[in-house]
Image (cartoon, rainbow, N blue to C red; front, side):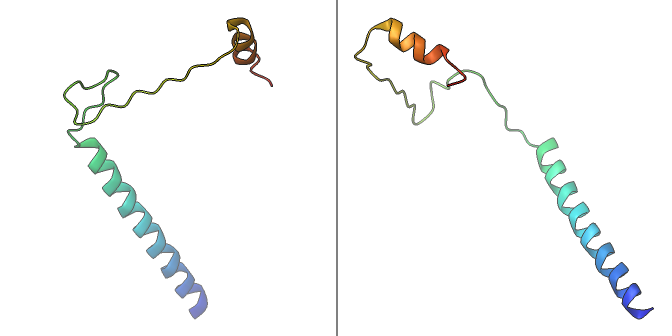
Length: 70
C-alpha cells in the first residue's frame, strides 16, 4: 500500500513539473514581442548570400533537380 502511494506521488510530481514547464513555455511564446518576417532585414548586422556555379549543361542540371525520387 505504501509503495502504491509513493508511486502516485511520484507520478503526480512528474505531471505537475511537466505541466509547469509547458505552461511556462506557452506563456513565454504567447507574450513574446518577437515578430517573424518573410523578407530579409536590410538593417541586420549580418546578411549572408551563397551561390554556386555548375559547369554543366542546363538540361543535365534540370534532370538532376527534377528527379526527386532519386
